[in-house]
Amino acid sequence: MDSPLEIVWHNVEKSERLETRIRERVDKLHRYFDRINSCHIAVERPHRSQYHGYEFHLRIEVRVPGREIVISDDPGNRRDHFDADLTIRDAFDAMERRLEAHSQKVRGEVKTLSGPPHGTVVRKFDDYGFVRMSDGQEIYFSTNAVLNEGFDALEVGSAVELTVAEGEGAMGPQASMVRPISDISLESERREEI
Image 1 (cartoon, rainbow, N blue to C red):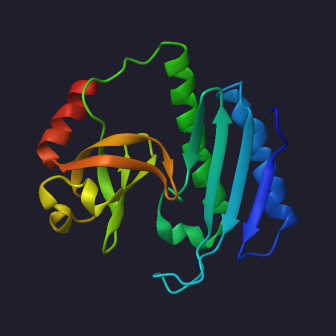
Image 2 (cartoon, one colour; image 1 turned 60 degrees about the vertical axis):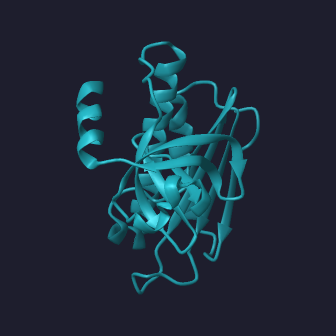
C-alpha cells in the first residue's frame, strides 16, 4: 500500500484484539488485487438500533488505481452483527469478492454486461433509499431519481434498474435514475448472464 492503513472508531471503544483482526484481514486483501493504494476502515455502533441492541457496522474503503471500492453496509445476517468478529468477517469477505471481480475485470476475464445495472432496494426512508447491486455495492437514491414519480411504490425488496452518477455524493455512490422493473425480468437476465 502507498498509504498506511487508517482505522477509526465511532461510538465504540478501541479494541486491540479487533484492530489486530482487522489488520490481519487487510494484509490478505493483496491476494485478490495486488495494486492497493490505500485502505480506510471505520468501526462504528449507531446510537439507536431497530434491533434493540447495539449492532456493529464496518465500512471498508479500498483505493486501487483509478477506482475506490467501498463496502459500506454489514453484509449477511443482521442478527449476527451484534458480534464484532462476525461483522468483520462478513465485511471483509464481501470486499475480497469485490477485489477479485475487479482483478478479473482488469485482466479482461469478465465479460461486460450491456444495459443498465440492476439491483434490489434494501433500505427506504421518507425521501431517499439504497439499492444493493449484485456485486454487493450499495447505491444511494433520492425521490427525484425515481422515474414517473414512482418513489412511493418502491418497497424493500423491489427490483430496479439504475444509472449510477459519476462521482460520489455525501451518502456515497448515488443513482441519477432508478426505474422499477419486475422481479421476473431481473431473474431472466440473471440466468442469461450465467
